[in-house]
Amino acid sequence: MAQLVKNPKACTVNPLKMSQPIGGALAFMGMRGTMPLLHGSQGCTSFGLVLFVRHFREAIPLQTTAMSEVATVLGGFENVEQAVLNIVKRTNPELIGICSTGVTEVKGDDLKGFVKLIRERHPELANVALVQVSTPDFTGAFQDGWGKTVMAMVEELVNAPNPAVRDPHRINVLPGCHLTPGDIDELRDIFEAFGLEATFLPDLSGSLDGHIPDDFTPTTLGGTGCEEARAMGLAGWTIAVGEQMRPAAEALEEKAGVPFRLFDRLTGLAPCDEFMLFLSEISGRPVPKKYRRQRGQLVDAMLDGHFHIGGRRIAIGAEPDLLFALTSLLAEMGAEISSAITTTNSPVLERLPCGTVTIGDLEDLEAGAADADLLVTHSHGRQAAERLHVPLFRIGLPMFDTLGAAHQVSVGYRGTRDLIFAIGNMLMHRHHEPAPDDWRDAWPKPTESPASEEELVP
Image (cartoon, rainbow, N blue to C red; front, top):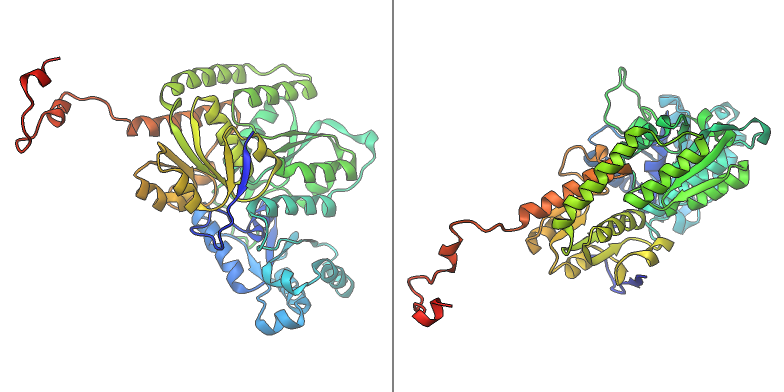
């Protein structure tokens, strides 16, 4: 049981966390034909736009209501209305996702009322889905914004069907923000191997997986469509990945009556076993030989990797669900978690395999990693790693100084195996292996007084 500590210092130094509106915007980007809209100043949107472009290295659809000082004081309805009308006129989206920001939350703008009034004044927008979500950036973090947005899409889009027409081979999947497009592709392959048809809400693998479209589109390139989201009530089960998705799964169960199963992580041997057995149970099929072989490969990888990971001190900074997956796996491999830093509160933090976990920043991570063998966080931890002279394993978002961030896989037997190899290799390369010339460093230098014969002879 880890003790949760919140750093009381007055300011954040080298922030680890990102804001709720950014998490909400990314969730909307997993929907087909969508234009995310941040209700706030231009600077709020510009920050998120640059961050996503550097991480995914793709064109990012993101708009703003461009609130000025006067509009902020008087209220932002006209800005929201004009932004929605301009987006519909120029991009013809299926969905417009509206996230609030700190400045409009402090003012007290009623986004829900704004959307209702826009519907009344503009009946021509009946075919455009409008989903609004409250995501103040002065509280919570990236994970909170993602979770709230997915729940808002469930409440707004999903229909309540007749339970008699449910398809037991259709499942809903609510992936947490810590899953990459590569992770979602891996999960889709697993579901298909069991004969299950999965609908992901949202699906970043369709929109931000790095594919090049035949024609330019100003909205998202792919992802889950609104019609697919509306039909999620016909599924036999909902699978939620990460504690952050529990509220959305509960909302879907309450609205459409679809039972859910939550997996707090899919990284590690035991969680993957549990996941495979559940899929076998609901599909009525045995676990395919492909995954039985991958399980054997993972067990062998754990055996090989524990020689290099076991006993090493590792400092990790990440969002709660990603932190839980990483610390649990590394502790199972025999590593010692010297420092665990996260961004927001979550029930999983109490179950971390370390003494304390701190809601803090990268300065806190650096302070707790003075004797660490490895630093694990996103690309903003590179300066701390350089000062500490320890290697940095990049994971999470943003990763702007490496290629293929969107295709990194850490779920399932194969993803866990590759993650162990990547971390183990990094620790192996740092570990000093004795060489024939090492005796030169141990021998007294010419300026040093030579050792006596008694000291040299054991």
